[in-house]
Image (cartoon, rainbow, N blue to C red; front, side, top):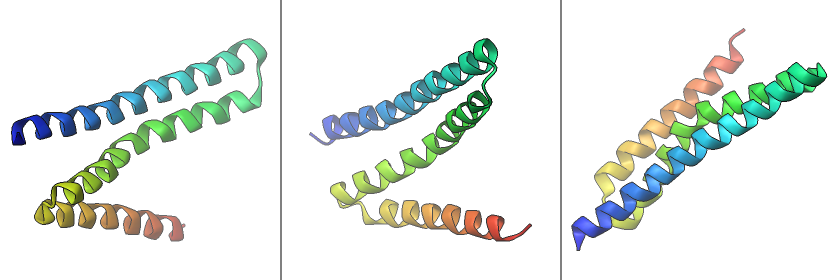
Length: 99
């Protein structure tokens, strides 16, 4: 039973990671198409959005893992994952305030 539950959780995390990468590739390709064939400035912006999606994919995995640990009532890993998320968010705020 526990092994089956672990496999389901791993499948969900795998799906989140694959979806993030595929969505990122799709958005970047649209941006490249617009930039190369139509020479639109919006193409560069769309490419940047695709890169942000790619950068945020591992963060989305952390958030999904956080909820999965909560559902499993695995509080040690829940709090470790929560601490990592808080550290990432705080470090981004600190990096944005410094010029």
